[in-house]
Length: 301
Image 1 (spheres, rainbow, N blue to C red):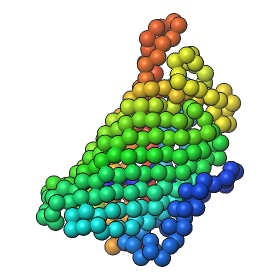
Image 2: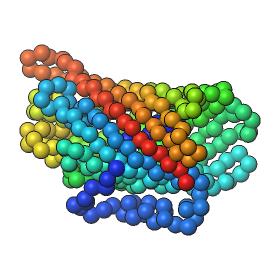
Image 3: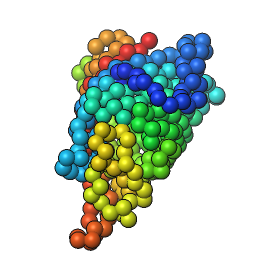
Image 4: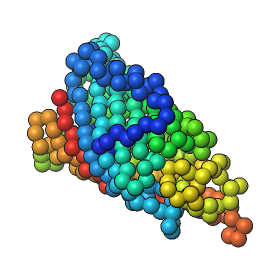
């Protein structure tokens, strides 16, 4: 799929000890074995986010622009006629214009055990996948690890249309309990070859922990955890962890501009909602909407 992970153009300064996984992934990306693997990819991008605080309304809703660089290196390991393992190491960094506490450097290792019954056109590929990533933020509270595991399906439906679907479980471990999150998700994407590029559409449903930031407007009895957030300059901004649902949608177009490079533009929208109780209104719904507009230049070598 050509839906890019939001990544950023400059690697920020790191003020705490770098997790060992960053070093491991860096060594993997530089090793001769992995250097010989196909489809090494570098992408550089810019993103505008109209709600980086994930606030529901008012002055706590902050917009920002970020820049990205991302390096991915896959390794394919054949197992049998119909099975193979795909390992991908990645290192990326992100830099924000205004909210410097969100600056991040990350490294990840993604693995898939893939099965395809035949090489015939339209034969689906099934896979079990697992992912681990280490995040180092300028915000101390967010430092930690993320884990994912699930199953996925890839299938070519026609000569123009490709399908991707996945269900998985995510977990995040960080320095603050507010950012120790768990959720389950289901996702489906469609690619459509159009002109000299690919139009893509994606949808995702998540249920689990949600972090909402803003002024201390909600009773602390309604959140699972809360803390004063060190990622933002405003000391009145707190982050709260709730349990709720999130719907994400993505629309984008990847334009081929050469044999090994392309330009990708996308719009991603997230809508989250939780139920909580207020002394005045009783049961109420807290929700936020965030839009991200991204342009990425991709090169493979």
